[in-house]
Length: 365
Ligand SMILES: [Zn+2]
Image (cartoon, rainbow, N blue to C red; front, side):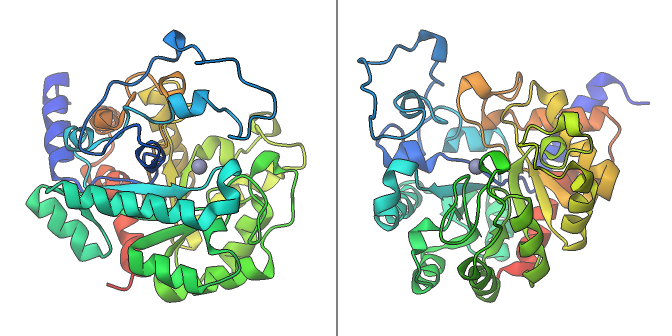
């Protein structure tokens, strides 16, 4: 039995060796909106101290949560200094189009892609990751990488040449839908839409597999989840969710619409494991570090240690778990897992090893 001090030293050393990959962040939103830059750490805004700048008219077209959302988002929770402090090897950065931006989805997405390229140009130790070799080299060189992902495929319209183009621009992960319904699939919104994938959505999965883009099933409803796994020719990820809520085993644990088929929770997680996929456990809505580790252990207990990773999705201080308020705090998870008696091998898989395995299987190069 090692002392608490030894355990802390061991955890710190292990974290330093680890390839650490976080599978979800919305930091490109406030960057593209002009609020923050990747190279500078800013304070996380305190929602308690925030007042709307003016009375908001009904029908304001900025979408749900605005302007509160714009004032917070994940500002202060992700930046290069915080990636360094958190020992991050690579951060998945989502290209996400809000409801009120849908009519200019392609333009808005390209704007976010442009910003990520610009951040890479402006920061010497920040790189765009497009191959597994990049990840290993970045780790060796003590740099930090960004993996570009589409969170929802609205930007593609009906036209896969844009998928090819996004691939060329560096996109290596993509989900068909966010919460809402679109041309490709029904999203998770309330689980009331049970339509699953459209023909276009099925073609998109095939094309993503051909190109070497990891398919993210995280925002699909249960029908879409099953359909994607049936046609996927490569491992998928579920980039950012709570497994206890996404795969609940009991009806009372399901936060979703009553139509949600709780009885297949375990079966769905087993199907993800059989596909070789990885579940990114998010920090959003967790109470504290223990709660996040409990989610990780939930997956390990049901399907073993090869199918779980991190997908933080921090989004404002009001949603952040205690002890994991921003991405620099990720080593707290390593510390907690060491103290809980997990082996080095398991912890390295959770921190990033499992995602690297998926990338090796899916990316071309
Ligand atoms: Zn999301």
